[in-house]
Length: 278
Image (cartoon, rainbow, N blue to C red):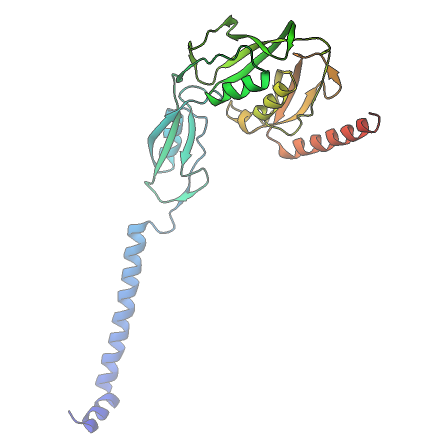
C-alpha cells in the first residue's frame, strides 16, 4: 500500500469504525480487570482490628471471629498484672485496618510463671537490693524497720511472710519483703509527690523514699485488671509532709488523663506553696 492509498484508508469510515471498536474494547478490558482485582482483593472491605488485650483466649477468639478475621497464638509470657491465660499483646494492634480473613497473632499470659533463683541481698542497702531484685525479674515488696545500727540495710529477705534463702526458687515477678535497719536518727522521711505517675513508677519512687504503697483505689474508668497498667495516680494520702520510714501511702488511680492532669497541676501548686515556707 503506497502513501496515497494509506492516506485514503485513514480517512475512510472503515478505519474510523475499527478505531472506535478498538477504543471500546480497550475500555471494556480495563473495566473488567479492575472489577476482577477488586473482587480478589476484597477492595473496600477492610475492617478495624478489635482490642482484645486482657481477654481470655475464648473471648478474644469470639470477637475476632465476629469481625471475619482469624486468630493464632504466637507466644506466651508471664505478666503478673494480668490474669493467667489473658491476652498480653496482639499483632496487628487494635484499630489497624485489615482485610477479611487476616490472621491476628496473640501473645498470651502464661498460667505458670517462670521460676527464679532468689539472690542473697542481706547486708546491702535497700537501693542496691532493689536493683539486684529487678535485674532477675523480682520486685521489692513491703519494707519494715527494726532497730539496728545498719541504717536502711537489708537485715532479712522474705517471701510470703517467711524468710527465703539464697538460690531458693520463687515465681518470676514476685515481691520480696525486706526487713531494714532503722538506725539512729532516721525518724522520718519526706513523702514524695506521685501524682501523674503509673503504679509501677510510683512504687519505685516510694521504695526509694523508704515507704510502702498502701491501698490502691480505682475510679470508674478502670474496667478490668489490665486497665490499671496504663492508669495513673490522681490522688495520694498523705499527699505531703514527713512520715515514719515504712509508712503506707494510699493511692487513687484513673485512666482519665484530664483528671490526672488537673490533679498534677494542683499538686504542683501545693508543692510551690510549701517550698515558700521551707
